[in-house]
Length: 249
Image (cartoon, rainbow, N blue to C red; front, side, top):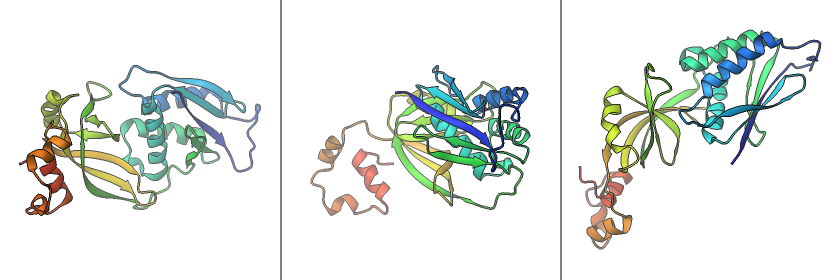
């Protein structure tokens, strides 16, 4: 499948033209820092597939959905979060945008369906407290384990069925290597969410345990007739799920 997304630079009066616009002196910096903020660990590529309106609308195309997901995350984060909360690559991209926009222009980012993701203009404006933390439990298999570089301060994992990077500590990184692509895990995570949209901004692993590799039907058969005995000593839904999956820890 092909994914397309874009950015557009404009002002309220639409004064940009081929004679009065953004210099290519700065445009290459924008492309460089944008790519660094959305690049993935996969081998797929993201290309500049079109330039519209005297270089003020840039279209990008890729076959890797991860690029689009990262593109959406980066622009939403820059729009919603203060500079201190951004990742290093996001900060660099935000600084370049500040230089290009200069308080006169704004940038709009669009997703694959041409929906507006974010509108970015006042990058120095103090952001109000607009996020909160929550704790979740997810189940799945590790499909990605690593970082953008060997010197990265934090590593991350991806879990099948959960569309966000989950940051991990060095100790968890070592423990998780043997589970890569094999064993289903129960994973406890701490997530940061937006008050306004309830979207997940970031996720961090707190711990994990193995769950049974049996099929659900096999676990139910081992438990026996499923009645109130299933919830006898269970305090939460997760306790019940643990029994079904054969986790007795």
